[in-house]
Length: 548
Figure (cartoon, one colour):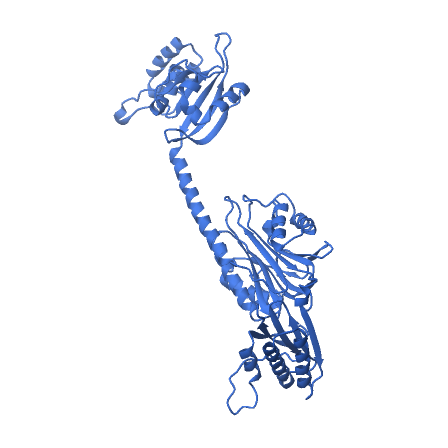
């Protein structure tokens, strides 16, 4: 039998005698399993370690580097404090109530915890509490059972470990992470539109809310881009990832979307270009995006989606519709041919574009979140910003939300009365031939005069309409159509035909008999442009700003 285990069973006097007898046994006769002889350098025997029974609890607690105090009774009368405790907070009078003689326990908010431990008999621990001396402690309060035979009340053993170095390191880390997050938030906000464009036919508001302090900033973004001729592009996107890198990638994608939008391409072609660019920026970075174009003449939202959540549209009666198909894979995956879809956006309707932070929760399926958003949208009324704020509240998005949230609300208002008088449309089908240009000029003259435009603006509008029709007659193919549109801010003139060759402005030589039409239009109009139409033709347009 091992000596230590055997001797522990003996009374104290016999145990010491046995140890002395055992120390005289030669090392060669030691029992197997007793270990090598405990000799130091030069064969000098090392002093044997004292048994635990030879040390009192006071000796053990007094030698510990942790701060230890023992209190008894419901008023926590001081029974003992060790040397480390005395060094930290000074001597404490035995028998005095802790609430009066140990103010450091109140600083650490331990007195209520000690009451709880005394009542429940269950130990409790609090981490990294800072005391009045500026040091941080992790404190464990353990119950001490009462001894009725000796008339002793139950008590609490307070064990406080100094964790100041760890606390300061953690604080430095939190400060560094806070600066990093602040940098990412600042970058994110600076890359978002500082002021949304407000098209003539739409009313728009947007909200971006970064995640809480424990959530790194993501790459959510939105944008509104006026394309000319009354058309508007709406964009919502989300770069997968967190921090400055995601925000930087988001900024590059948003800039690219604006550049591609200026080409006035269909939504699916914009996403096709953006898909290739996303792979070039960072092959490991995935992003989702929904790109939609609103044309007031058609009352439709033409859209394409790269892995993004469906656009929601609430009609005038309060019914909510999802723009679900077609949805392709996220940007950066490559190898996919995106397609465009349509959803009605008539006057009186509201469209909502959003990122997954609004509807995704860890405890539920994302479809449940989208359904909750539909219910909130069905009852949301008021101005776009009011709807935005209501959706944020209804989906329980707070300042401590665990993900970024971007929401874009678009309303196509139903105008009546005086407001409706500012919006007019007129169109004329042109069959071609030599009489088409005179008919177009006469039609434009009559319409612009009926709209009570100033004479100078009427003359410029008739000249522009004539030049656009003449250009279409010379370079286009039937069917041709002249369209005039008035809003509260501008006059829009558009000519469509069946040829997809887009005109470009060029410098005509003095001897040239043609080639000046587009240059004339560009010189007299506020802006002009052209685009291909879904039927394989083209549209050429110009705008005149109305005097305010």
